[in-house]
Length: 224
Length: 224
Image (cartoon, rainbow over the protein chains, first blue to last red):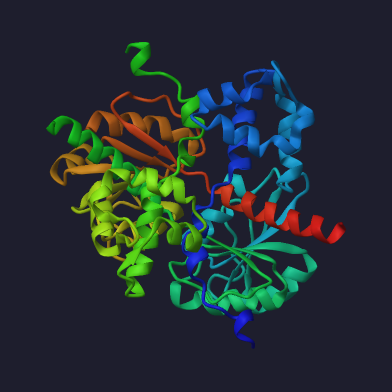
């Protein structure tokens, strides 16, 4: 295997989990405004209400210019539908989760992973005691050896790695070989990447650091 | 209870999970550079290597001016230590997790939640069948009625809500009453907030949307 096809994840990937999904942010804002029956919204109002940057909003949505009318703003529902298409969630993409431990089981039933563009087709595990079981919502646990077949037959596009750090590389390579094009990694390890597979790593610790920063700021405020 | 003390989470909170932890991003970049034995780094190099905005970096780190030397850049280790203090993770903050289901159990053993500033002191659950057990790494599951005592005795500063949507509000209110100042919420529900408690909600779906956006872009590229 050539070096370019098997480089160590580094630099960019160190922070890949942190790239902002600004379109997702806008989609959530618009979904919320729609739930309030609001018909139009300006970039200025969006920035104010949701603590975003209005110049960034206009820049990001410039390509959706047809929806932005000077003085009126964007049509909430139209822009929302446009973002849904832009994010590629106007059709359902099948997902598998490798690793049926506590994390995998929790993710299989996670509401945001089932519906509106995504469907968890199966859990995969190497442990014969887990194979044949199902998550609470009924997602079946299949054998690791079944993975290529499941990916092919269910046209799985996204895989979630929820195994231990030492098993993650082997799982990632097998997913790439099976033809999965996008991987969400929960294992705390840097992976050697295959150039054909998009990887996104999740770093839950960032959330705690953000809360700690808030607590620290409050302490400093009291101390002053 | 006054309205101002019990407002519905909305507007800001819709996207509270999305506020960028830029200091956390910089900390990860610096930790990575330190692991490569790199001594100094300029804002330009950081921006290039990690696909960040160099003007934003300079702005964010302007208050750490003493470490930035024109032409040389920042001292990697000094800036890293400074960010650790700034994030308030130069001491350990105790955490409890309410909900000892699959998600709570997985989070209790999550590496990023145990060490370098955080320590999971206990899991809390209402189910008598779970109380008395422990996570794989040995975090004990205590009864819900014990929560105020645990918060007080272990000086718990952060709580994680890993219960079902319908139980989350009651848990949040009890945590506030027990004196917890910061809450990380995994339950898919908007909470009525107490003004004294900082809330951060986790939206794992954003990660899948980001992968879907990548897949969609690749499809469009092929289609063109």
